[in-house]
Length: 184
Image 1 (tube, rainbow, N blue to C red):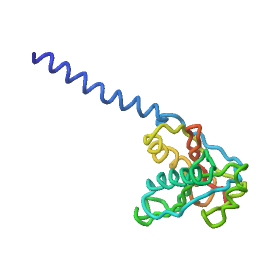
Image 2 (cartoon, helix red, strand yellow; image 1 turned 180 degrees about the vertical axis):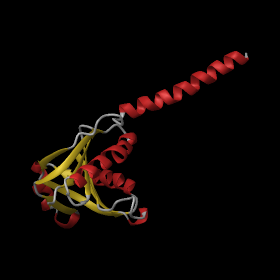
Image 3 (cartoon, one colour; image 1 turned 135 degrees about the vertical axis):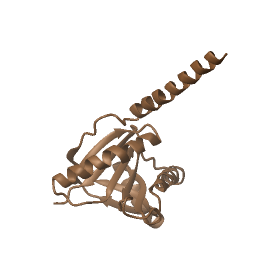
């Protein structure tokens, strides 16, 4: 009986790290972060301002998506967040961001016609340092924080690019695109 118990215990202790490693690999945690300088945009965005923990931006993206679809019959396929402050340097309650949805080019006139119902901005085509990872849940967001941000920060320092707000685009293809504008 004791032998069976210890064998079961050993199997459990070996299975837990294996499952964790597999989950991290599945979310892209161990994949290489490929950085690229490229021109992207323009983006027509419906958004809200947010102050506080950055994790609160997901609810804003969902709320705007639902409101555009249910009230205005406008379907969007990309959510976004623009993050102005470094969470390593700014208290969580003071973190500033914008969050919302990117409107497809065919629907920009519809949104513009809604007048003051939404906050709207357009970001013209610009050059960015970019990286992409697959979105497979919260662990993918963690992988971005731990892997992508440090890689981009290092790259920008090596190129002598100034620090800029981070933009993340969550597209319907289950990809997170990280964009840092190049300002020389």
